[in-house]
Picture (spheres, rainbow, N blue to C red):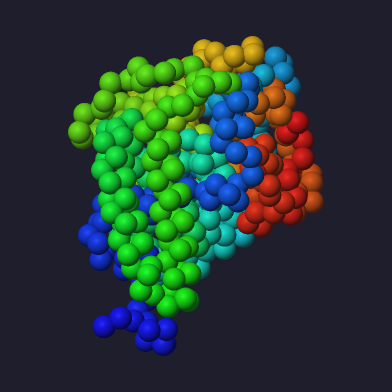
Length: 455
């Protein structure tokens, strides 16, 4: 029987329609894309491609459970800058670094672990709920803007998998990720290097999805003729979204840079990783960093987040000389014990060495017009709390590397400790970074204004 325009006309929601035509491959891929609507994004892809300057990238490298508070400091400016033993590996990059002091996430500066980790990039006030409830993180917000220009909008990487279920009466995912696509949607980090590599370079799955989308659109056109006006409008909105996805697939499967800036690398110089992650933690961390760098060098994405270890981490660093073979979380509750403090320092230094190695590699990437990848990146590095023993989140250990396409001076220590509290909010920094990525943004999270002093 042909449907009429009465209130009983069938409602074809996006999920119902996709499931109804058997396009089960398309939906998970759609949900993970987090693409931005091209018409609402401002400048066109063609305009961006024609630019002669390299694009600016944003990244976040985060290790959990804080730092040895006695050995995380920097002072001085430019070549006169001095570093603690933990930060000493960064000495060759003095002019490329901005060390930030006394910034914090306003809503949570002490207390249990879970409010002090997953809100690191969004500034949300987390509550003890059984269903994840946070806010969109700044990395995802930026990716909604820049993602329309790259095959992959956003890489969310990890070394330890995010747990499922509950821990301590809250969703365990609170301890495993800092990236959120919406208030109720945390993004679990990808820990499999091969999966990351294939997402960047294997387009066979995308072409398969495109054929599915073609079938969806063909079926939707048939359905459209039988729907009431209100349902037809809903279906039209859905079809517009599907076409946007088609455009993304086309971009991901065709490299059409006819003019303007070109990436420094045309083909991956990293072999496809093994199916399983490396068993050696050191090799695993290094491989994820290499994949992030490769994605930036080839302009496959402009936003990447890497969590070295979960909060309340089970990871051990006994492979480092002089480090106790205990869990990082246990070591972080040092109670001023000399052996634990020294282990804490060495673990922090190890993460700093990984960071320094990445900076060295970026500084070797020529991106034209006298710039390197390090000139065109904004990469924040640090932890979600200062002293892990007391869960002190008032002074985030935070270093910003790179020059943001010439918009960040570097070679300085910026101390906000003597500023009014509203100027000490980490979300002010996120607004300033997002603006440098071309995002029109005045406020974010608990921010009051863009952080001053970076230029």
